[in-house]
Image (cartoon, rainbow, N blue to C red; front, side, top):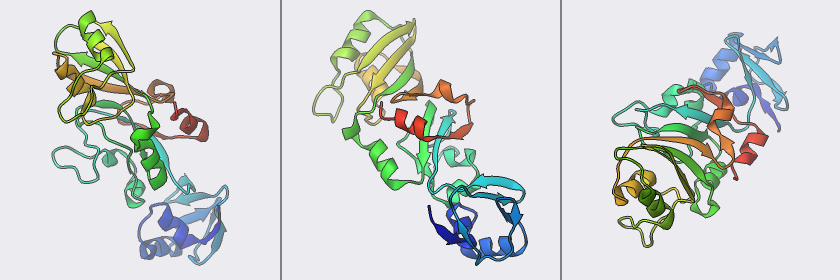
Length: 237
């Protein structure tokens, strides 16, 4: 943590341009740890800092680490083309501070989506070298058979992939339900693997990344939460 002028702190937290942040402060709309400040040059220690802006409290965070329960029909893009972007589900401040999805889920896929403004974290989480398992619940168009499960565990060949890709875990959960655990994170991997094995994915949900379970976060579709250090540690698997 460090000491910064109040206008710089507000800007870093996504409240707008430096000019706009200075206006907010001069207009008395900003309190520091409960005390209203009207001088934007005031130097503030960011350690344990709680800002109140327009009577809403925000704890200072150098970076934000977020889990979103992504609904269907949202795009994981800062510039969506056919559906609303997932950033519309978050406070506007996160757009200003350039929060972005860690990897992508298809527009029709639901479940856990990580988001952050920490570049090294995003790169590390997205790197195929980390082999972080991701758990998916797939609904299939055709019934799930033992042969299908065996194919997915043994590996199926996808177009443009040099070698067959296999699921770490594949379990039948219902006549048309599969739980699949993957670590590669290839483009449309679950859907393509099911197609290559002779079936079709009609719905897909990501329920966990590493050891972090979406169900443990208590979120409903479209809701989000900050991740603490213990939860971030679970992402390693």
